Image 1 (cartoon, rainbow, N blue to C red):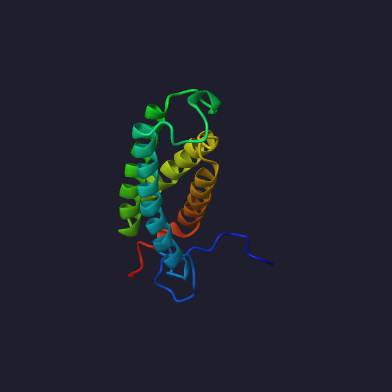
Image 2: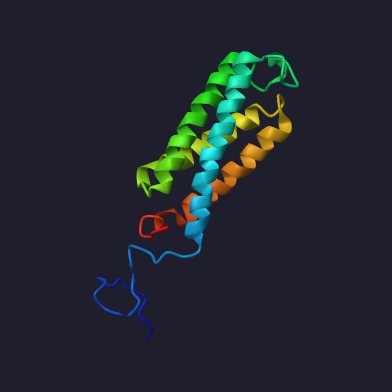
Length: 152
């Protein structure tokens, strides 16, 4: 007969049982890349925010052509806040902080939503940021806990 119980080891045996701290794999490099991209995208979001605040004629459409009819100053502060939060979370993820990793996934999701709502103003830029945010979320949710146990 086959034993259907989940086998969990207390870590003292060498049978390869359950280990709460996974052995770092090559994905740790991807997480470092993801945190670096979060810092970079945060800077890009900040630039996008400053442009929206100070140069309202820069974008392809007026405020009425956006999904949410809000002036560019409000969009600028939104992007600027997201940028600051992404930079802070990127630094926290690089340090291996689990709270920063959790908040980073949430902030990257909010960045995706904000850029999808802003896509009519600057389509290529918004789609590039959405793509990078998706890669960041994937890297952090699949192998994020490996950073804590690794050394760069």
